[in-house]
Amino acid sequence: MDEAHFRAGHEMSGGTNTTAAAFAEYVAHGWRLCAIQRGTKGPRTLGWNTAEKAIADPGTAAHLAGAGLLHALSGTAALDLDDLAGAAEWLAVHGIDLGELLQDDDAVQIRSGRPN
Image (tube, rainbow, N blue to C red):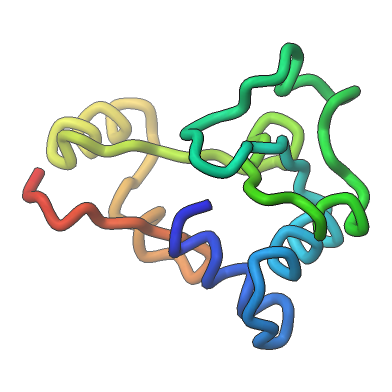
């Protein structure tokens, strides 16, 4: 779990400073998670992205060492913008204002510190 996602969970959990509390809060808000083993970068379980394997119980989520957000099952999305100008142009052609999305109060952003 990255720092921005942890901060979002931290705020939702009323300031409880634990990753476990954040995971439980995510699930309580309707998001679905997959387990990620500590020290790895992604899920290793077959079928990790299916509804049957999704973690939907806050009690189970609270005991995870690591977790990933299952966007398709959570009604969320992530954009990795390696070329901000190019992405803005492409999205505009499709009627999407990237600047508006990035400025939205619900937007969560992680910045690498590297220029695009």
